[in-house]
Length: 453
Image (cartoon, rainbow, N blue to C red; front, side):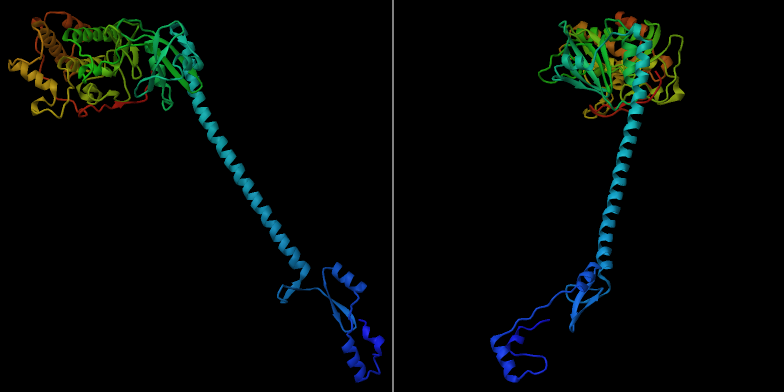
């Protein structure tokens, strides 16, 4: 340290009071010269302090408030960096592990999904290859989109798919049913193709083609201009009302179609879902049976067939599907469903109507039977004598078809004979033993099961 005031007579040994006063009056300058010691001290991460005429090096660390920290600065400095960098590395490693875990889990889920669906698609493709000689046209999904104009016009929706209106390049209109992807097993698709694909009958809807491409499955049917029968049984205001003769002709056509399914093919085909919604009408109101998603194929020699569980729609299902002690499941299950359909067509109303004023009319078939037994005339509005005869015939045949025990029901070929015959020759059947448990009103439930085709 050097004092500028030494030029003014200040010395270390002989300094007078007046000299000090002069120095203070004129002012003086102080300066420090950092020595080589400080450079070495700071290079070793120490703190260099002036002490007396020299310097001292301290490796203790002080915070911003001057507090003496217990460890050297280098340890504090590098310790903080170590913790900071270590934390970053640990967080990065954990993040990468989490990311790789999510990627692996996603890949595993996709793999299992693809494996399940590829297995399903392979089973469908195997079936199509085996049955290739029986099948109609196979379309690509792009052709399906083109013929439906990208699924522009929706005709309806059922338990197994949505139906759209389409048009073939050759001109005819078609109905395209896109199967729901939730039908994971593909059984409904195989059932429809395996049954309708081999059937050619005037009263069964014709399968024009199909599509199997990835997860997309479609069935292409001939287009039925007048839609399904259900809207004509209880016609709403503004809907065309069919005459009694038209209803009778439709019932006879449906009976002929079911008889063909049971006896006209090399395999016995049981539909298991005969109901108004599955009867389609063309431009001339000719009926065609549709929707074979629940159908089963059996050998023609099988009088009793095996099922894993009940199938069909409540209100049209035969009682033996629920009560095994009354008889085995056979083609008579379709006969029962047809009888319930025939009764609704004859009465122009649902068989179960909880809103009837008279309690006895809530279950229509029982009420009709009682009227016949008691000799009461059944009131039929705006009907000629011939219309009354046709309706009476339909009701009596329906009562035969809905007998409790399968053995008491006629086969479908006998049903056709009864409808074509004279009403006066028909005998009254026994009274239906019980009324099936049905769903009230218009609500319908379709029961689905898994079963081998």
